[in-house]
Each structure stands twice: as C-alpha cells, then as structure tokens.
Amino acid sequence: MNRLICIVALAVSVLCGVTVWGQEKSVELELFAQLDQAVGNIAFTHDGTLVLSHHPFFKPNVRVATYDATANKVVPFPNMQWNTPRDDNDWYLDDVLGVRNDSNGMVWMLDMGTRNNIIPKLVAWDTQKNKLHRIVYVPPPASLSISQLNDFVIDQKRNLIVIADEGIARGGDGSQAALVVVDLSTGMVRRVLQGHPSTAADRKMPTRIDGNPLSTSVNGKMTPIFVGADGITLDANNEWLYFCPLNGDKIYRLPIAALADHEMTNDQLGATVETYGDKVNNGGLSIDRWDNLYFTNVGSHSIGFVSAHDRKYSEIASDVKMQWPDGISYRQDGYMYVSAAQVHWGSAFNDGKDKTSRPFYIFRFKPFGEGILGR
Image (spheres, rainbow, N blue to C red):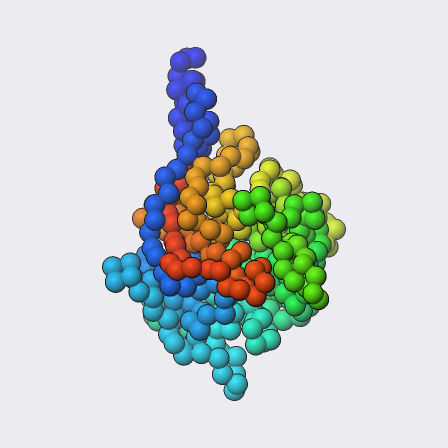
C-alpha cells in the first residue's frame, strides 16, 4: 500500500510539473516564427489558425493579423477594412493588444481606443461564418482617461469577460489600475478593485531588464515605469480568476463567481481576493488543466512557473532572443505560444531612438499539463 501511495504521488508530481527527486523541471523553447513587426498577444481560430496583435506600442498599420507559418506571412484580420481608421464611425480596430478565442469559433479583440481617443470596445469576429458577431463598448466610468485595457479572459459559463486595465495611458502611473467586468448577457460594464494591492503596480518592484532599470522621459525627467493589472487567466473549471500587476512580486486570485455578483461592493470583492503565491515582474499569464501557472517574465527573457502542487515559483525556460516576452496562449497542437515584443528597445525608453531589430520572434513550448483553449 505504501508503495502504491508513493507511485501515485510521483505521478501527480510529474503531471503538475513540480520538482521530482530534487530535479527541477524545465521545458524546451522552440523558435516558431520570425516576423517583421512586434507581436503582442496571440489567439487561435477554431481550426488552429494563429491570430496575433501587432504590438500597439509601435503603432502598426495592421493592428491584428493571421499568420501563415508555411508562407511566413501575415494577413490582416479579419480584413484590411477593419484595420483602417475612418472618421464616419468607430467600426475599426484602433489600438489592439488583447486577443482571445472562445470555444464557439469567435475571436475577441480588445480595442483600447488609445490611438485616436475613441471609446474602448470588444470586437467579436465569427471565424466560422467570417462575419462580425458583436461589438461591446467599455465606456466611462468603467474605463478612465488613464485606462490601458490590456488583456482579458472569457468565462463562457457565466457569459462574462474580465479585462485587466494596466492604468498607464495618458500619464497614468499604474496606481489606478483595475479589473473591468463585462456581462455579455446584460451589457453591464463595471470597474472593480481599482487601486487594490492585487491590481495596482508595486512601487518596490521597478521594471528591470537584465538588472538594468527601465525608465522614460516625463516632463523632461527620466521616470521609472510602473504597470498595474496585466497578466490574467482563468482555470479550466471557470472557478478561479488569477491575475496580477506587471510590477509586483505576488500572484492573486478570486472566485470569478464573485465578479458575476453585481450586488457585491468593492470592499466585499476585495475581501474575496487571495494572495496565491510569489512571482517576478511578468507580462502574460496562462494556466493548464492542472492549475499550474505560466508567466512571461519581461525582465529576464524567461518563462516562469508556479506549481499547483506547492505554489512555489521557478524559472523553467529562457532564451536571450526572447526579449520582452509578452503574450502567451495555448493552441490545439499542445503547445503554448509566446511572443517576444522588444518593448524595452522602443524609442520611448531610449532617448527617442528605436533600437528594436528584426526579426521579431514567436516561441513555443510544451507545458507540463494540457493547456486550455482561449487561455
């Protein structure tokens, strides 16, 4: 019996990706794509076609595109018309970072609206019928002038979308970051946990790239960059929402059912937030079916990991070419895909000089457990 217990424990340990017999687990990074423009986030259509946002930090003409690995080319998604601004209406993609897919064949794109100062919105494109499915606006007071609506999750069980607002646009310093809850059934949109420790940037955790501080000029003075709520993901059972500020050493979670309860006050919601574990400054966040968490670590071109077994943080992969790893998403082929956006080499952080260099990369790796489509 004791031997059986040990075998079962070892099997669970391997599946959860934890340390086995003193050997630290790791994953192998593969270089998947080399592109001419920086990639922000990644999603997939119902047939596995890769959809990417060109990182809005660099003001691309094509905001969202599909990627054809065989031909190594990108095609505007859903078409060029949607990637072209116009004056007569806002039915176009203005500034997109967050893209996610759901199980119904919809690709959802989060238009921050920061380039042309339009109302932020979610655009859902039906990839099976190749037509617009829905637009959902995120107006004030759910979004603020300092809002930078970055990434999001889709809870199809409750018909909710939860957005991480970094709070760094138009002079924002990450202190007013928040979560934005979109009820797709009623159209209700509300802002929650603004300035809460789980969403606000931690001033004790400045952004450093390979140990060097990252700052930009504000009113002629070099100022450190602090980013609030950024990484966000949802477990396979649609029970726990995991989220964290980019600048911070903790990962948090709360029961997503609490966000579906529109009667809960901000204080009541705050009381449901748990400090889950430790991390480093990260951009993207994903999860597998065993509740293991995967982070893209912006400061050290690496992938971080928190095991569901013991909630301990470790680094499981790195590559010097993976500069500012950002989006991370699971595909039907069993890999997690990771973009490397080179954000810190942009002109805003280098005295007005763009120090980025082609190509921009997409990497991939096999997670320890099966991932979840749309995460």
